[in-house]
Image (cartoon, rainbow, N blue to C red; front, side, top):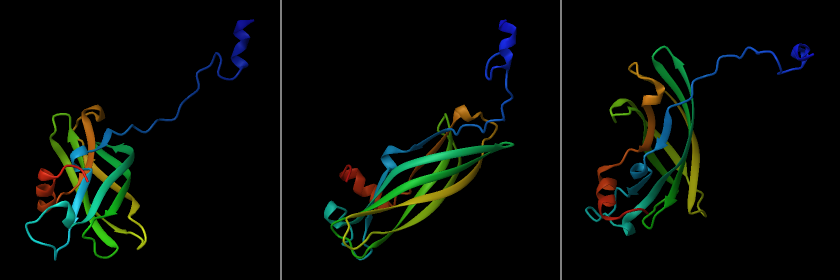
Length: 170
């Protein structure tokens, strides 16, 4: 009687499964590079303090989907990037630069791509953001996906790096 159970779906038979796309390597926004500060070009030179910040950039979220083709990882990334007005803001627009890198477990950089995003914040709002979709392809160098990471962060200007040495966070 139990032998006749194979006619019941999912009991007694193995079903063929379609091939599954590989999972992405761990994808993270680097904490120290999740924030940036933009100063006005006409601002006071040398005074990198909070009162002179025109814009803050916040790398809020990322999601990734990946496929492999030979030894190349193809990743489609959807990023949420926010701009927040600072005390020295002029206008409603800001351009922020960020990067996507493929790194090994030993922190070696196997590939890096830079991107720019333009954000327009409505005149009556403090913050605005964009969903930025980018696609990248990196050679894995023969390493398994479990030994790789996709890392993202703002490409910091020298001014922003100096600012964050003295002022942590926003």
